[in-house]
Image (tube, rainbow, N blue to C red; front, side, top):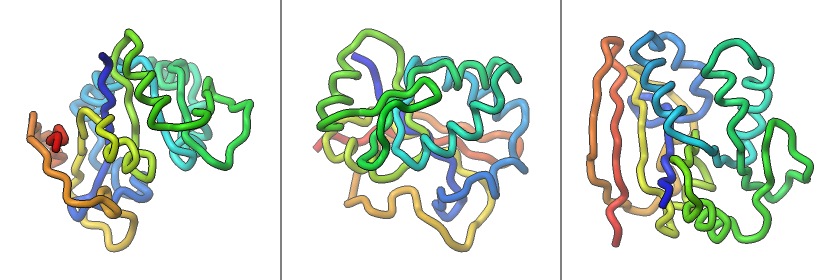
Amino acid sequence: MRKVIVSSQVSMNSVIENPQNFVFDYVNDEFMSYAREQLFESDALIMGRVTYQGFAEAWSSRAGADEFADRMNSLPKYVASRTLKEPLTWNANLIKGDVVKEVAKLKEQKGMNILQYGSGELTHTLLEHGLIDEFRLMVFPVAVGNGLHVFEKFEKTPMKLLESKTFSTGVVILHYQPVKK
């Protein structure tokens, strides 16, 4: 069975909103190697509308720039949205009907990891139904005053630490597995 991995870039105080405002000061070869490995261990992306729209705009314009951009652009994307209509661009498919059932079907297919960037309503729904296998939090050594927090709307959710890494820039990578109730 495939794993659903949620990857989020967060500030020290758990803000995930507008990571472009704090991430790039800490990106180096070490970080990019990690990001590349994570992306290349996946063969599909799932995302909500907001992430899809932001990523489609940013990444489609980078086609041919490097192997990371090409991988990001070539992977099939599955988008959960109540407002978007088909056809979607950027190699994306709209998840129709029950998102929980559709993601469960994706997990049952043969293949590599299914990667979700960001964390929002889709993450909450998938976690609530036991469909998330791992969280990978990239914690950046900066505090951000305002913004949406990574687990802002979640109930108490125990996690098991699987792995941690610290990069020379002070970025800490935390891999957690939700503890099944």
